Amino acid sequence: MTITSRPWLEQLQPYRPGRHAPLADGSMASNESPLGTSPAVVEAVTRAAHGVHRYPDPLADPVRDELARLHGVDADQILVGNGSDELIYLLAMAYLAQGGHAVCADPAYRIDEISTYVVNANLTRVPLKEWAHDLDTMAEVPADIAYVVNPHNPTGTVRDPAEIRGFVERSRARLVVVDEAYIDFTDDPEAMTAIPLVRDGRAVVLRTFSKVHGLAGLRIGYLVGDRDIIATLRKIRAPFSVGMLSQAAAVAALRDTAYREQVRAHTLRLREHVVRLVEAAGYQAVPSQANFVLVVGDEAELMDRLARHGVSVRPGSALGVPGTVRISVPSERGLELLAAALADADHR
Ligand code: PMP
Image 1 (cartoon, rainbow, N blue to C red):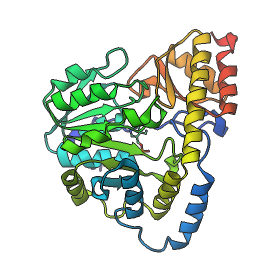
Image 2 (cartoon, rainbow, N blue to C red; image 1 turned 30 degrees about the vertical axis):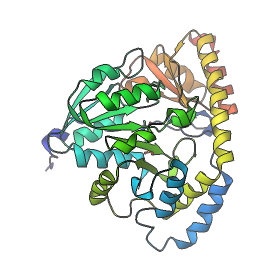
Image 3 (cartoon, protein in one colour; image 1 turned 90 degrees about the horizontal axis):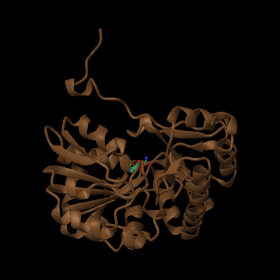
């Protein structure tokens, strides 16, 4: 006997995660840090491991205090989650469940779409304009939540802070969620961030430790927003969703600003190299301010060619942009693998 799920879930396609390559340096499918994590993080996690028989701090207060200082907000304007993905689900439960309406870009970050369907809400997708959010059209859609991913995933494109501010002011959505997972890889993260906009209560900002901090495996992210929104999300969250090791790692990562700078500088430098390699091989690279580059070309041929050289990237068809592949900025060794694959004339 098959037990059916709720009817609206029957057609839902699960998230398709990226694959790791056989060699770690060849893994360019999931926008992780190619430089490992900071030694200070490893030390902090090892130390924290002695306490794992206890439940973790329920709200990750040590992390919130550190973040409050960093962003110039109060700790009660921050909610820490099991990756920012958990926070996206909480937002959907609180503001979209049972017939709500969300608006996002097309293609969107997949979890924004999936979480909307999970709570049986409606979704309007607004096609990108020259690979970036069409904020004018999105602003006209009456909605409970508008998702703006800045820089966007899967394109790496950005809208500047004035455009985001204008959108928050004009949008017909009740709440604007600005997902800044990749903000550290923009030209000027301090100037780009929408965190100053959370003050009026209509915008929240999502951040993750999975990218520039190199903590994808520990699942930790956070939301900055109005106190009332945080209080609402606290009502529905699982009480201990953020583990003790993740909390210790996040605090250590925030304090190691030198490591963060190193990852940022590496990423910006190698992103240029990736673009040059891709263009030299005759493909179009979408201008990116993230730690990945979207490449326009024959998806199957590119996937196959890269795989034969030990390089794993994300197929565009898994990201809502068939006819592309998304390449995460790799390590130096990874760049060599990529160069060899793209220079492989046999396969052109
Ligand atoms: N938002 C965007 C735009 C992302 O690309 C990702 C990572 N795939 C996330 C959120 C989720 O990050 P986390 O690992 O913190 O759940």
